[in-house]
Image 1 (cartoon, rainbow, N blue to C red):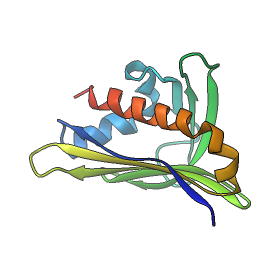
Image 2 (image 1 turned 180 degrees about the horizontal axis):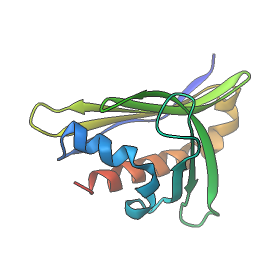
Image 3 (image 1 turned 180 degrees about the vertical axis):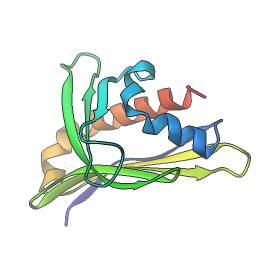
Length: 143
């Protein structure tokens, strides 16, 4: 199966894992600290597998792009994974929160495509990577 990583990076924060997770899990407030998110919210309840997350990506020189993804995994203070699953293709975005052993938290962000979606998203790969790294940098700056 075709697979392509769009981002596989670690962001260091000066927050505890619990603090870092709490800020991240507050999707309704992403737009208040992140310049590439115009709006975000969970559509059908809180964080849990099966919940839907809507966010509007707002990158410079591009029209705002609404995205709806399904939460695939939620482990409080540890991991949130969401994605789109289609026949023969999927895109997955995972955030793992790791104690750094010095009171801070490292956030491992991975996003990848599998199957036919890999070919369809190939041209947008740099754009997605730019969104992901900007999100991570502005998130880390909150601490």
